[in-house]
Amino acid sequence: MCILCLLLVVFLCVTDWLGFSLIRGNPLPESVQTWINKHPESTICGEVVRCQENEETQSVYLKNTYLIYNSEKVSIDNVKVYSDTPADMAKLWVSQGASFLHIVDLDGALAGRSVNEDAIRAIVSSVDVPIQLGGGIRSVEAVKNMLELGITRCIIGTRAVERPEFVKELVATFGADRIVAGVDAKNGMVAVEGWEKVSSLSALDLCLQMKEFGVKHIVYTDISKDGTLTGPNVEYTKLLTKQTGLDVIASGGVSCMDDLVRLNDSQIKGAIIGKALYEKKISLPDAVARFEQGE
Image (cartoon, rainbow, N blue to C red; front, side):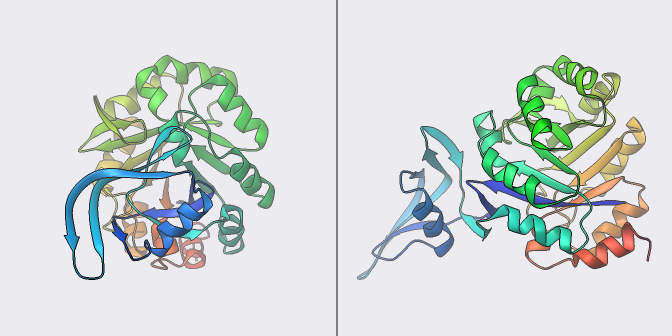
């Protein structure tokens, strides 16, 4: 089973998503303050849940929090910054044995175009392993640009749902080994536009359609599991693998070595590990030795 290490590229930071309150009189949480310091032109917005006041502070608790940055809305339900130099994280994972990196431009997924090209270029220049990239890749020109930049495979998500023939065109133009269909789903139904919208199309139906168009590789993300460290959706990923015959890579919820064992035993092609690495729940050298090198 192939192990892919995840880098979430957001405003040039490697991040995690949580939830927070805005506090007047006290500083913002350190991670959020760091973010704002880098982008002082940003505005934090959200729906007020409640206000709380005492003699020293006034707190405003928000939900559905987001930033307005460069006139665009970007989801930000709190940010835990693991590193503000993604290229350094990429080098770290490769030094620990990573043979493939998985990058998501979260800003790009929401904006519908590449936003963090400089950070992506820095990652490509810093390591000598294959890299697949998703987030905001919605045109032939965008794919061509990223492949020329040194990206090995481009992941097509939203556009695969909105215009499936686009994926067929990409496979014909660039080859099946350069194009990956990103299937993000909630309760079995495909989600698009940075997970902001849930469609009426099932993940299985989308995978079968992608197979008809020549796609060989699928990244399946159960978005209800992503970032939760509660375990991947092994059964549905196994179903997709068996029903389609495609190379399906599991994403979302991987939290421990036992999760990887279950995926491997289910004959699933690969797994993307993100938060579990950053939170030191999984040792990457141990995972690579066990599942890629058979030790």
